[in-house]
Structure formats: structure tokens, C-alpha cells
Figure (tube, rainbow, N blue to C red):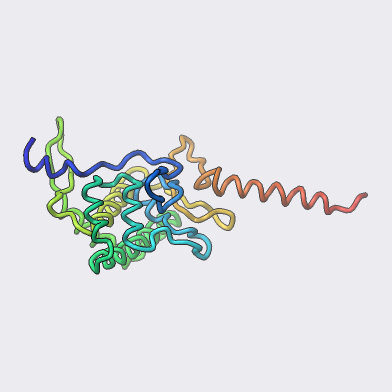
Length: 233
């Protein structure tokens, strides 16, 4: 194994999404649900909620952002532990502020896709700038019979979580699945974004166990309440 390959040994690729966040025995994970279907959408959904006044931000500081990275198995434990040891630093606080700005930019850009309107120029430019930074931290390596982009571990720093999210957004925005990005509808839904991967494109809610089931229960209660209130003939 070459030195360059050794430098990638502490990194991990994004794993398939799960409906519920992984449960750990040694720590409390910051985010309870993953409904987005893509890393960038799950990152956008770290505010509860998006369709109503926010009641909770699951990533209030850089330490929580790193906890989210652990949940997503985004990087190897050695690298995350290194960042956690410095999570109280000024650089970490600055990186967290930039992460929150990126989250807002991603939300506005993907909402423009859903609404079929032009993306806000300032937010698109913000995402583009982060993407340019991210690309400079990758190297092209040969793997099997082809070539793939991998992180250059020597250049990874406090901004690594942002860069990973931005590259996920890049893949979705420039791929064939962009039209499948949807929003959990208000007022009953939470406003979280998700990728509809159903065969017929029929998914409406972030999850039937979350918003869909609750909306169905409210409609049922409203119908039966109205019937009880009807005067007898």
C-alpha cells in the first residue's frame, strides 16, 4: 500500500441512508431521523421544522455537527476524534457558522428546484464557492478498472463536513434524480426535503411514521368529530 493510500485509510464513504438515525450506546446522537435519502438533504433537515417556526436546531454547535458526522459514518473515527478534541476552538466556531450558512444556501437552492423557479443568485454563488474549496481537497485516484475522487487527508480540516455535504449536493443537483426532490408538505408536514425513490414517484411525506401518519390521524379525527357534531334528522 502506498503512502497516499495510507492517508485515505481513516476515511469512509457515505453509507446507505436509514429511516431512523443509528442508535449508539456511548453517546446521544444529535439527529433522531434521517428521511432525506441523500447526505445533503439530511443536512438541510437538521432543523425542526422547515415549514413552521423552528422549534429545534439539531446542530447548535460544532460538537453536534461532528456527532452528526459520526451518525452518517462520514469520516473515520480517528479524524473525527481529532476534530472533537478541538471543537471548542475559534476555528471550530467559524466552521460551524459557515456550515449553518451552507445549510441555508442549500435549502434555498433546493426549494427553488421544487418550486421550479430560478435559484437565488447569492445562495447559488455561496454553494459554488464551497464546492470549489471542496474540489481542491480531493485527488483523483485509480481504483479497479476506473478512476474515482478521494479526499486528500493531508488537506482535511474543520471545514471537512461542509465540503462533504457540498459535494453531495453537487451530485444531486447535476444528476438525473433532481426532479425527485420533494418537500414534506405543510401545514401538516414538517417541510423537510427528501428524495422520492418510489417507482411511480408517489411519495408525499418525509415518512408515514412521522408526518404522514399524524396527518392521517388528524384528518380521521376531524371527520369523525364533524359527524358527532351533526344534529340528528
